[in-house]
Length: 221
Image 1 (cartoon, helix red, strand yellow):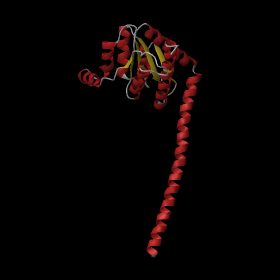
Image 2: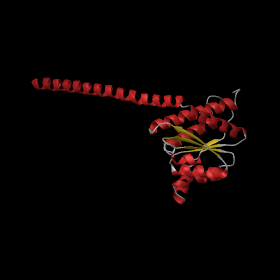
Image 3: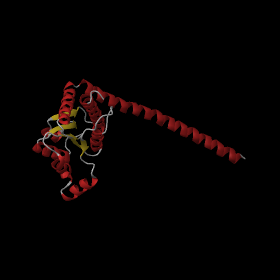
Image 4: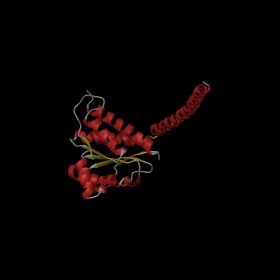
């Protein structure tokens, strides 16, 4: 009987300790969540105050609108999270953003996995995007290269090839813009060195451009 009471008492003590531990962990986690959210807000505020960056967003939207009106297309490329952003933005343009309207020709360059793996195997990873630009890019098309560092070698080579073809090039960048600075007609450089915050800003900027494009090309939608 005494043994059973002791076991119950020990269980209650353990449960109390666990509850206390998780309560403390929960409070600390909320503090961290607030810290991370605040850092994102500060990042957005820096963009809101950056007149030059906003001008670059506007000029990018105008150039993309002009390209679509001239029956040109938009190609996008990036790696990892930036590849996801490229595909996301392409989908907003070729599918729809806010309005039901005709599709716009936009495509992310990495979506054909057979092509990507074959070229990476035969020519090297650095040539994946430039080879697709060579195959599908035409004079007057727009290439958007996305890289938080600006130094992704396959994106840099894609921009180089695009310039050779006569395409217009736009860079979604971060930090100091890196090597891509030399090959972008417009450089949208997020004023941050924090990779996740740069990525969050890139998709926000992409959405802003998609909305401007849709509103200008389809004002009656």
